[in-house]
Image (cartoon, rainbow, N blue to C red; front, side, top):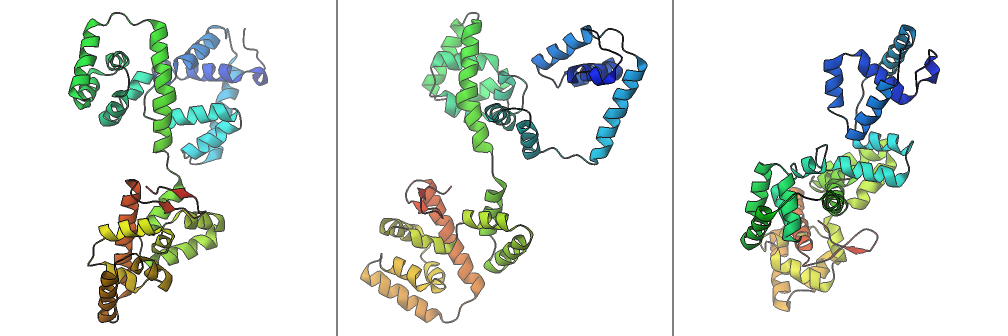
Length: 338
């Protein structure tokens, strides 16, 4: 279909095709290199059917393009702005699929992406697959990356994979597509989700590591600027006082693992209820000795108390990550804190 002289009748694909034809072969080739195969096919098909386009239409195209660029000022592309833009034109399931893919490793094809996944991460996934499947995957990724993955796999399993690769014939298209689909749905999508990090979670983690005075100063400033964000950060923070939600077994496990030299300092500045939680989960003799140690300390610096308490919080998080204790979230739902 020929493009009309009326600029308003041009489709988005026709505008893109005209723009690429106008910038010259070298520049157009660089842009094409960044596109997916289906995009290249659509633009190429449109180019082939453009026919003659008047200079007036081309001039109008460049004016509109320049106006759009200049009116936006400086442009900042982020995952969030991309997701908002896609949501306006696509349904949620499609947006989620696209965002999971672009949040994952770089690469135009599945095999390019896998070649950019850390070899230990990829090997950890592949070791649970059939040797024949792993042989297909390693035959498609870059050879240098395949060698690193192979070296990371258990030796007996790796040799099974090598033997399958040696006996491998031409891979049927439907088999390859099935492997790609499995990798996309089970591995890359999970990898993208696990690498995604909420900004509020990041700030909560940073605030957790500030001394109490500095943290309160930042939190007050955040409340003044954005109360909703401040409340969300607060809900995600895990503080020393939250250790009061430990069950008796969790408190005993934490006591066995904390630095005993820092325990009196940490509990010296604790609330009476939190102090009693730990003292009641110790032997009578140990509890008496700890009370005596705290009494003998006299006045202590707030900074020293906060450092000792933070050491206990960090140990609690480590134990939770190993599954040895359970830390309750702000809603009272049991979950592991990583």
